[in-house]
Image 1 (cartoon, protein in one colour):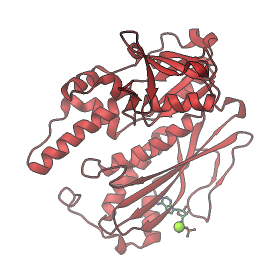
Image 2 (cartoon, helix red, strand yellow; image 1 turned 120 degrees about the vertical axis):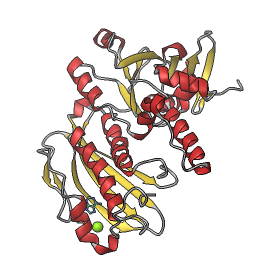
Image 3 (cartoon, protein in one colour; image 1 turned 180 degrees about the horizontal axis):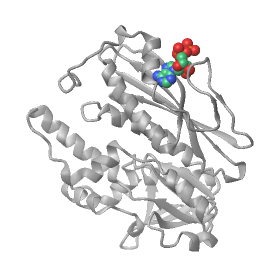
Image 4 (cartoon, protein in one colour; image 1 turned 90 degrees about the vertical axis):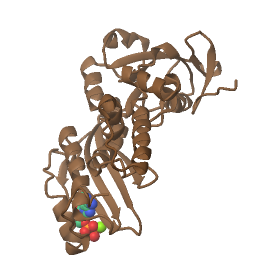
Length: 347
Ligand code: ADP
Ligand code: MG
């Protein structure tokens, strides 16, 4: 996997655990005032003053959550941080620290972990987050990566999944379906590669899609935008599993229903053309594709003028009474019940 590209291969056993941790974590300057003690003691010490603390964690397993035959380790490190930061932003909070825990088999040389930590370091730098700890151990097989993110927010700023009210507007950031179509492209190339390893894939026309899959960005910018616009969402969730499943979570937690308009779903033109190529329905891809790490939130209708025309934000529909159910209003104006997989094609 790495050896053909990278001639140096330093066995992890040459360093030992402590030298390895020191080596991997040497380029992580402390960026936040709230980090009192970082890496190196038995525990990190954090001080958020009068803000509330948020914490979220995620476990990624090779072969289940990622495939190293087409995921560069640097991208894996970056994405693993994004997945966690996205959960903090989805609470309308700012992420400040992470911890990183690793289990690695002896298949991985030092150079592989350096690549992984390059991605983690880049994410920390761009998003202003401190690496304050972790754990390092061996595994019998493959790579396991667990990241915990910590954030802070004033109590009255925190947004949960449970606050949506009937007549609130349903808003989504960015565009949807790109990460899923990027995965389709990568998996197709991976199959071609298995048959003919000499074949160099030409991914130029799929750059946006492949980036959405391999190098997603968490929407810290939206949390800052909402603050600037003085918009306080009534509920919020991040879209990791696809729009429909997240809408259903939000409606269930808020005890409401919704109408979502198919013609409002934001799609990048490259998603539309890739869907045509792969013979997939772009609405279904947006509804059930997942891994876009956009934010879905609701706002009171009174706030509409504050967000109107913002290119980052799309009003998809509105919240209804619970007894009206959760529906997609299709382009031809039929009302289709939403399911976690997108919609139920048999009703
Ligand atoms: P302990 O024996 O208390 O578990 P370790 O020797 O595992 O401590 O870790 C020493 C320090 O290095 C701690 O601050 C720990 O949080 C940090 N650390 C260990 N592994 C990693 C890692 N993979 N990435 C970042 N920090 C780590
Ligand atoms: Mg330890």
